[in-house]
Length: 329
Image (cartoon, rainbow, N blue to C red):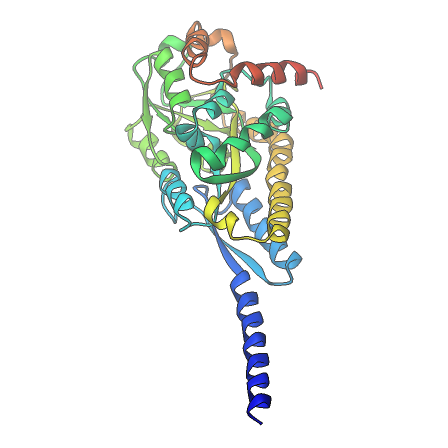
């Protein structure tokens, strides 16, 4: 009798262990972004979460925290490194603050247009750069997405790059764009996205560096006299998973998460290629002074940037080669 009870007890414990292990492997992942709920990146993150839950038969889900709910990108990257945050869709700008090689993506006029930017990000060279992230930043880089090319919105008239000199110009806080506007002679002013509209309205800043989607959707043109369609930089995004979280996943879960996240990150590239020109056309239709400029507009600022970054990143020449090879595809 004792042996029978013991056997039954062992069977129950084994069954309980299986249930516990199954429960432990199921996870509601937390994914952070700085973009507002209506943004292309946020929608892609939500679509990824929905599909992951379906594909895992409910074993995994994703709660998306947009609009800096979990902090700014520097804070979220720290959370990823400790495992306090599971995932993020993050600007490569923030990653470049930790891993300098990624600053090469911001070479002025690396991409000829939005479609060309997408081809650069889909290249084997760009994908290979992600291999540095576990070692250098404690995160796993799954794949790239992107936003639109960078434009300039100014409260005053801008007829030449000299008109930007001395202006307080809002930027995303990272070295490549800081170096570009320093070369122009502007006063680059880091500022979080939620503060930009009021800052432009009240003159706290004189101009902003922004992509067409947000210029249009958040109505930054309301307080502008001049919009420069300069297309001067691409603006990549990367899907990240905490290295600590990744290490605790099964190979099957890693493969599923990577496949679905890459699919939805890649969809953002297609979205911007499709919609960018429409946003630009709508901005031009607001009646503000709208000027299209090219590399020559910025004088020697581009060459100054190239000289500064030639020694900062080992990948700049490789990305330039990719850009050259994919320019006419």
